[in-house]
Image 1 (cartoon, rainbow, N blue to C red):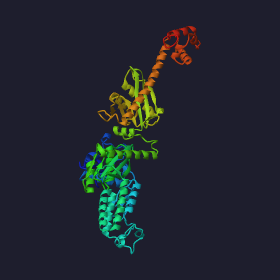
Image 2 (image 1 turned 90 degrees about the vertical axis):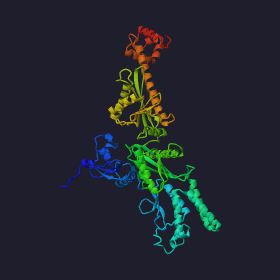
Image 3 (image 1 turned 90 degrees about the horizontal axis):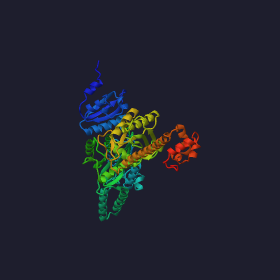
Image 4 (image 1 turned 120 degrees about the horizontal axis):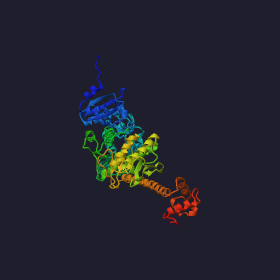
Length: 612
């Protein structure tokens, strides 16, 4: 009977080598494909009881019953293999580049003697040159229209020159083709034209314009005016294309800039393509299944899925931050491009501005998609995205709740909770608390009490939970709030505290506080939430203190109990109103006789009334 290899045996046999692994469920279907510098360490982490050994969701790890592993010779090879296997298996738990197989390309059949230029959605290894994919189909159509206007590219499907027709088609007679099929245009001339088309598609219109200007001058000197006029028309067409392109860097350069925006389980990646210092266009793609993944991982997955199938790349790739596979991606693209290529995260200057512009576009497109899908009612302001980046949050903090404790020397401590939605107060969600269990002036216990009470009730009533919890204070208040969230059953809610003096932000995952720039819109929003919670808490505290003062003044008078106190306040509206009343007016109140009226008036002397 053949021996069946157990999981324990397979795990024990794993090498400490670079490679790719495929995790499978009980039906043998791949549910996740990943790569690792050490297959042994990474794959074993999924089979440990410790949930902190990896960042994958329990819904995935519960399904893993088997795995396959493939050893590779380099990180670059592992990156390519991972990308291919993800496309082949489409695993449920991998980050998904949505609709990546449906975007169109411009295809140039350079392997044919007389190449064609057309749109396709199929990427084949047939020796053709592919440009794209184009997420912005309008941009692709404009590029193709411009090329067909400039050049007389054949539109027929003949396998030339083997299937040459007996006579030219209509395109020849209306000036759209020079009929290379019947020899009216030589193969060399046609190939030269295709080389120019390739330059236009790559964005190198400046180099081509210089070359065409030289040819036009030569044709004019040789008195070939008709040929010179053709070059002139092409030059004018190139100038029109250049006018539509936005100048980014006057020093020129072939650069791609990549940026991401993410919100919960969704993300948007944007690529700006700059050729010869001009912005050719913007490509945008949406990614799903990104929840639980670090920004570096999402960025790496997006770049790998997009660039590892690209034939045309610039000389430099600009990214918002460094990521683990940067060197592997750079090595692969150097090999593919056949020229020097590097990946870097610029910190300042024109290139940093280009990355920030791409990031702004990614945010805009992600917000637009969420609005169209009904996942958001209005656009999130810039301050929320700024806050998300500074605090390294998975989700844009559209809803923020702020907590504050108010008391004077421990007397009448109260708590307040304010809710901000999309950066603005939502007063219907404000809540206030009378501190009950915290004895004396114990700020930490008070924070723990009100946060615990709020979220326990919220969970019990299945209420909507905020994207970010803010408490006023430092590390102690943060720790107290974290314990309250744990007891309420919502330990994973993002939680921070904001200390007043130096405006330091404390988080649970950092040993040192964050010092945000005072010009940062995210910090200004946190200050608004904190200050509003303080204002609301102080208002409630003053109200309670006023009631306590009022009660003690009246109840200290012999013969005045709760019922007579209530009658007096009902008759005169306030303690000041009682003090301002005459003895006769007080005596007319039900339950108050002349003698008690004189006692009350005498006792309240000095409280802003005429009898004082």
